[in-house]
Length: 220
Ligand SMILES: [Fe+2]
Image (cartoon, rainbow, N blue to C red; front, side, top):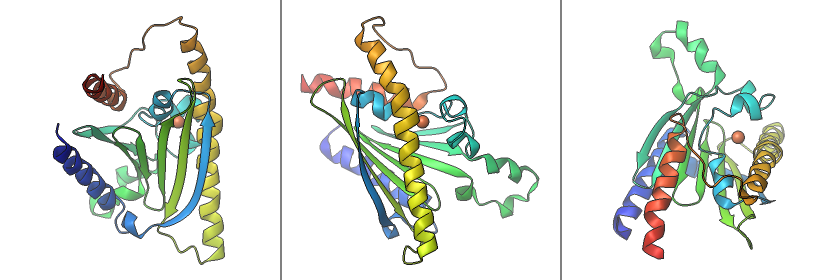
């Protein structure tokens, strides 16, 4: 893939992200928060935590799993980028509702993975941007987490709610995903396992690692 193709595919993925935030285009979002995570985990392990949702039922039993389904995903890829759609628990309520009353964007989280290190998580009311970088050693990484919303932050109660959502998402990633994966990082550093096997229910992980594998040899 040449530079032009890469830029075209990135533009296409971002255009879809904007569409998925209708009726509130993500370009109309207002920035709400900005925090860093300095984790004892490799940057590839860190960003992998955003690429499947079967772990919701166990890792996020009292947090994300109370609002989102586990192990149920729609996957699409756009060159080196991919998109995952995670249904929210409320989607089950649509079963007995006429299809013309469905509003899909109120019942899903859309995750965009932009090659090589960016994750954009979109709901109808919230946008989370995660940029994950290698740190000073293989077992450390830096994650820059930013949040935005199309809601009116000049309204104090709305602003307080948006702040609570950002703090909740950040704490969940820090205390549940990254805390768990720091243990995985320690296990891998022991050398006990030479490789990991991704399941058929992990198309995001498969796609990401195949893309990295294809890209890296060109830089050796
Ligand atoms: Fe997670």
